[in-house]
Image 1 (spheres, rainbow, N blue to C red):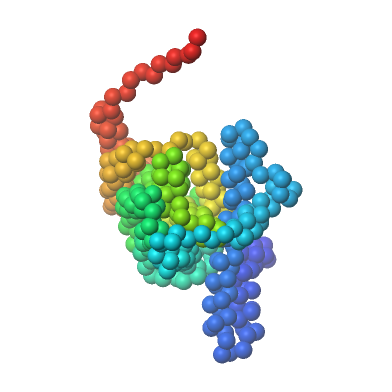
Image 2 (image 1 turned 180 degrees about the vertical axis):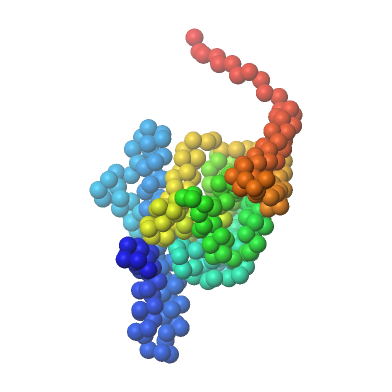
Length: 406
């Protein structure tokens, strides 16, 4: 290893080396336990801390978008607002309805947070920084994610409140509807990579042609799949404009209407942890995971690339929340089944064409790559235009007129 590369590699592997050093200086009988704890504790600490930072960024960002002040009273520039919120949540009275199922009511937020944390286990946060390197990591992620629907139903049903039950059923209908395109958009990546391992999927993208990385998002099917994945992820995590399970104007607060104090804070935490987790999977599948987009930037530590991409997606979520109005329930379901589902199937077909279409034509690899790119782009664009025209034909859009009081 050259002298120039050695410091960059040391910075990249600093946390891995620190963990091994601590394990080696632990008595033999406790090394396995210490290794497990040193893998779990950073996840439990880092992502809730990121949640606290995100709440400030979101409030500040929405304040700017809506031309108002964000938090500015607690600490300099309001940066201690998450601490004030935590103290408030811990000190508020925990009120449980008399007719509620107390055991299930208590377990629902715990199950939701636990499943959100488990999803981080298979995400490659950096080079050699995957908590559990499973051969079926993507399958594990989606299997764990399905448990969130159970937790939501537990919260709505155990509260013995019609509003909470209605909110839970709306949430489950939404989550199931958008979980299908979420999974199908990932199938294209699995087909191309030939593996369900999140680590190997990132390794497949960490190669360069010239200076440009082989990220899946740089392909037609990858770009379309990434857009569909992030739309489905937004709905899956109940983020605006898909935040119908809360529906303050219709069902008060949805499935957690009967929760207060720290239990409500756990729901709030779980929503953001799920957003981080699904964004991390999107980074892993489409944005090269911890790899850099250009070879001359590979000296930057891999974990900085991962969290930089995660922060960019978080900013995107905040931007969308401050920009788009909430959908109606019929619009949400029609969008999932009539548009998202067919388009994810088209992406799978495009990925198959990309896989089997030869990259070289008449000895020219560059020409073959351009032809393959254009063919796959047409495979995606053609059905998209046709589907949009068909769906638009059934809508009767009248010209909007404005009337003013005189």
